[in-house]
Image (cartoon, rainbow, N blue to C red; front, side, top):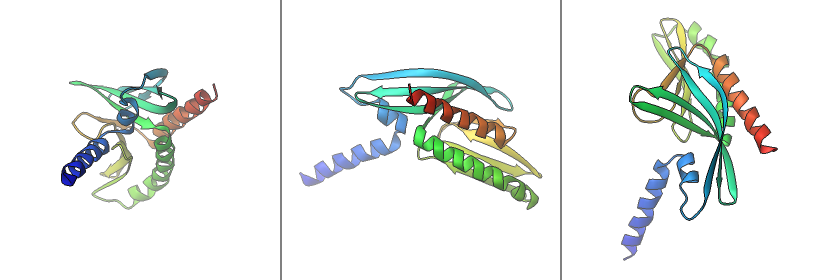
Length: 173
């Protein structure tokens, strides 16, 4: 009997570990959940652009904010939902990556990748090939066509900083 209860707890923990912060926060049962979106300017990428927005999620008496980036793909869209505290970490990471990119290019590697990954699997970084850095944002952990390629880190930092500032503004309303 004890093993059966243990197995159920372990299974539930494994299910929760596989869910993103957005899924965990917005899928509570027995609670009214409200989504409120605030559109932001599109994020310019090399071969496309992505829609961005702030999503406020109210679940019962608690609320949280996510920066969402949505890219239309061949077979549907992919969306990154970056929770506010993760957004702060991503901004710090992008600043660090920007400070390292020139040194990494100067080291003239055949190939190098430098990236930051959140708990939910969102990635931001760059790779260097043939003496050139290409910045990217990987929206979702699994699947293909989930990546945005961006000309430089400044575009990414500006978009993420603007999202943080908008969330800060929405929190005071």
